Image (tube, rainbow, N blue to C red; front, top):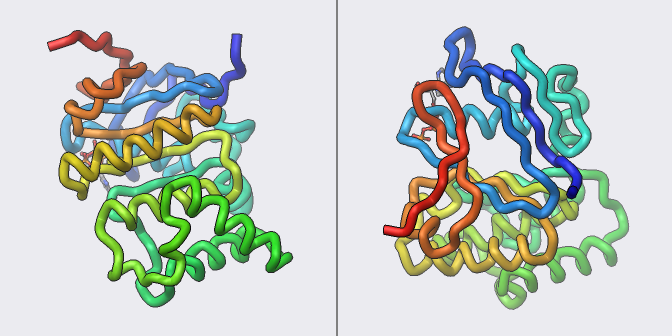
Length: 227
Ligand SMILES: Nc1ncnc2c1ncn2[C@@H]1O[C@H](COP(=O)(O)OP(=O)(O)OP(=O)(O)O)[C@@H](O)[C@H]1O
């Protein structure tokens, strides 16, 4: 049986003092692709935020890529974030610098020093998402789909074991969404685990995989049916 990369037991997810999700028990194993679905406000983002240390895990137990979420200290968060790649709906690229410099910024902030190795890594991740020739463009010179591919490249910089993608296609048209999804599928095939929150049922039908649903303050696995 493959190794568990994310595990929660009887966890409760809070936004300040208000309970968003309760009795969350789940695991994600190395190499799995897992969707997280649920209506707006059902708690998908709050769940993701708890996983990357943006919200504390105050109740229950949880571990992610070897970090104990109940004991996670502020100063450990940067180390956790090196082992997970995070992709957001709104890309979050720095608008004042080109793509190479956006990626360079992240490498530097995560402790890389050798500029030859940094350039090699930037080329490697841009190549993976089909953006090798676009490193000199500024974010505003790229389409939404291209910006998201760069954001995925950025998430790959530190070879994360797990990628958390929160509505990565939420700002994209259906065709571009499929293109971005193909990139995520390729990354998955190369052995990485991916947890992707999404509203996009068309994508789930096209690329079926294990699906967790947030509903009524709970998270549970749902069985996909062909429609
Ligand atoms: N910063 C915050 N402070 C207080 N409450 C919040 C905060 N962010 C979200 N909430 C509340 O937590 C609940 C879950 O919101 P969350 O954003 O996790 O849902 P979601 O499923 O990701 O929704 P969406 O699909 O719209 O992003 C909602 O009731 C929301 O109002």
